[in-house]
Image (cartoon, rainbow, N blue to C red):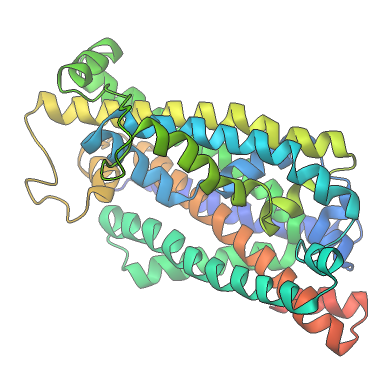
Length: 381
């Protein structure tokens, strides 16, 4: 049963996100140019941008799915953190120096400059918009499932709540609102994961017992060196494969580009990606500990929620733990705020970048829009 304090935490994350959008829409140049609305006047600060890049690509899907992955399949997943860290290094030293000096707004403008061909630019923009829409659908469904499991909010209503709040603060404040909301929401993500780790560890007899139980059940096995593509996760697929899978997120990606290009110097742009190496290590450590703690909690009780049909999907593991075990006021609210934070950050990121490239690449060249009109159109879109 949710406590009024829990609802207060959820209200705070929702209202604060909208409040940030209102504040950023009324300060600075009041978001009247594409340079400010889409690129933050290229005067954003390093640490907020680095945090924004980190949490934007770690949606509620990862926050719900990663602990479940550790719970049911063990530590092989942890090696994907190495692959993501390698992707950050490659992107920081190849794509950032390539794109940053061009002072463009849509990353796909580079393709027209490079190949002197408009079709390549427009086709690439079209593919980005389509894939982003599909990604956004999954990123919103996952937290909606969590809200349904914990608070009995229908999935359609959960999707509507996430979408409406994200649209409001993103449309009002542009990239500045998205970045500063990400920073605020990252606090709830951190506190939410820590709350689960601490509570589940205490209930399982302490952190040492958590690791002992995980080890006894083979959940600490990490390295599988087989070069067999039929194996679910190996060292090779988790590092090299994941590195190539994540380079397109940190390098030639409109959402990442808008952030590192919003910084005043190339050096800071590089550091915004490099700092994500540390962020990935921290996040993976917390997600892994969450998975170990949940496994020890249920193993000690001889219970598997999925086998017992308490949940229909392994991705409901964290929500069912919150619903049945976190009866302490504020704990459940913090966890739901954590999941909502992941949903808001991803949704606002995708909305902002989609609207920007749609107007800049498809509309502005043919309608001859002024910069002010283009900014208004991006807001409405």
